[in-house]
Length: 490
Image (cartoon, rainbow, N blue to C red; front, side):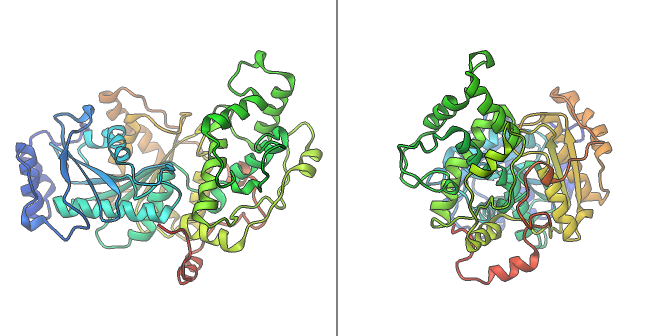
């Protein structure tokens, strides 16, 4: 459904938004008439790949948009959508994950388009990349996100405004897009980060490092005593054939995590209680966090960093168990390889040096990307002198993968107004404006404008020296960027 502020008649749309290129206006007219084919020659620009081809839209967008798919010059599949009643602006989407497949997944970008149909229904064109491969690589994903923006420009011309949006790990990717490509004049006009993983790679996964070692201390089955040993910072030894189902079976064996409490043994219940109390991970997301600390850690360490260790738990004191002294004496300890930590930091940490308006939306009860990630991000921008560019909003929701459609529609509209007028929204103004969008969507508005998250260190045990933000300064980024082979290869 369109925003209550979206224009109704088709032809006045052009005059209202004063489209900046005749080629763009001609393309929109063709779309509205249902006759769009190849882009006019005036709108074309050198493209890194074959032109996008017309594709079926998701059912939610049938009759509301024209959709396209393609593959860019780096092999990343993508999907595009242009609404019939286009407001002239574009949302470039960065998806979460990371997925762990070897190649770009053509289904991912079309699935994301279906999931984020709300943006298109609100009148925004949409562009999303599947990234050129699975596996970790924040700068790679940011480059592929920028690539799909350029694909869109080559096909449809320059939009009135362009906003980059990311959710989950995609929030990290979108924030990296803003820092890396946002200084190019006219490239992007604003940033929307929803339930974002904003602590960066060098600190943002420390609670999963803790889960990996605390789990093994109590459960001793990952690996089992009879299996080949390996340091736990590897997540899983290279070459292991363990599956997600196999990992779940071990978690079930140790904790009975998916059984009713009455069906657990006393030892299972104590193991579960201790693991949750020490790590602060919610029971309902324990399995997914352990998967990340197993399979994604293996990808980061073995595949992306050549077997080097970027993680540390040296100097961390674990607390909350039935016997903290025994836990701290028995848990596996390790220190990071400085070069590996540098490479992970350069790839994924944020300097806070953003030159665009940034709006964030985060569920207070997010069980995956804890809301304290927002404190880390604010501290990073504050450390870079850019806190004035940030507005953070919070809702009384408790899911990670999706928030209310009315809130998404409200957020992109508020960011658009901010970029167009210079009038900065507030948490209270956003809470008030949501009702207009919910009248058409009926998904609810759950803002808590008074909420402020606690510091990141209150939720994730800090490592020595890990209290200052940003985790990577702009000076470090420049210096490290001059090192041959730094970071994670695309």
